[in-house]
Figure 1 (spheres, rainbow, N blue to C red):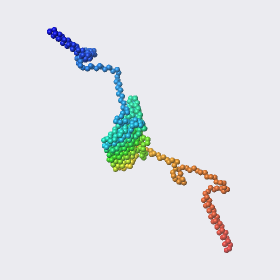
Figure 2 (cartoon, one colour; figure 1 turned 30 degrees about the horizontal axis):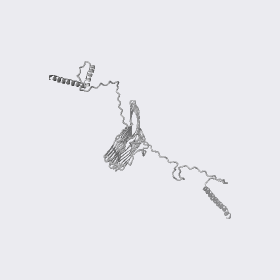
Figure 3 (cartoon, helix red, strand yellow; figure 1 turned 90 degrees about the vertical axis):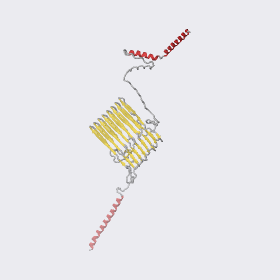
Figure 4 (cartoon, rainbow, N blue to C red; figure 1 turned 45 degrees about the vertical axis):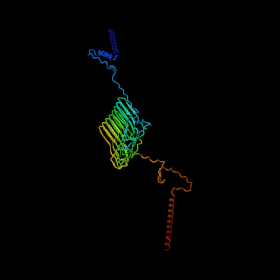
Length: 489
């Protein structure tokens, strides 16, 4: 009995020993191995340091130290490309493309707002050259039937930035872009406010050039609501040049606006063009009408038709403002006029023009503004309230030369009448074409010599000869009778 008890105790002790061995064998080896490695590494790298407490076996293994850098400086490359992106179906038409549209149509019962923003042909050069050209393009969209329609596409394209000897060029100028059109109908408030910023140069120790046309954002605007407002803003041909050469051109394009508001129509085009500043450099700008621009009285003129009870036309133009400091700056422009046809009972026409302003400090500044110097009467009917404000031909020079000119446009010569279409007047009075002389036929030989005198003169001479002969004959007869009477007596 006692022997059985000893056997039972031995079996239980053996089982406990086996269980302890199994538990020790299944413990995670990584928990203790890194601690030993870490301790060894630490002791080798920190000789004489205070021994550290062993790490918790349950803690995660420590990461290996990063490899040392091979060289400095650090080079970082983050290429970001934004090209041909489309949001909500509004894709910008490509240059000279036959697809896409820049026509916008909005029709809502409360408010229609169209405000495309274009920033293109902006050239910036820092110790490098930069050149760009562009055609502004609006994104066309149809918004019909909403409570309120809002269209604000923002476009930035064909801009160039040159830095530290690396020239930049972005050329996208096109002439195939059709004029933009905007139609807003049926709303309480219609607002069209396209913003164009193009042909802007900023140069420092480099040459810059910009060229743009706004044909893609200029065009026909039609509004028909309670209150109609068209406020196009154009900032173009702006140059700031320091020790370098810079050129910028921005031809002006024609706009046609038709507003038929039930309460008020407002047209406020704002144009800032030809702002040139040169510091020890050369800057040249141009803001002239594009070819084919309609003329009224030899002036480039936009057409405006308004039919609300209150009609307002307030064009604001700042053009050919030139500043030269130890450099040469020049600009030429011909501001666009407005010919309003206002059918309302309270028409208001207040054109404001600041043009041809030149200032020079030890430099040469030249500003020319055509067609804004001596216009005393506004274009259009001139009824209602008309207050034209014009500032043109202001110049100032301090140790330099400043020239500001405001010439009138050269009248278009009248084409002379074609020689093939003479004036219909009697030939005996006037003729526009010379008649060739006709040679008379030679008369037949005659024994009598021709005197060449007219026949009437011959008849008069003959009559005088007959009368003279008759008078001489009568006088002779009287003298013959007189002696006979004396002899008889």
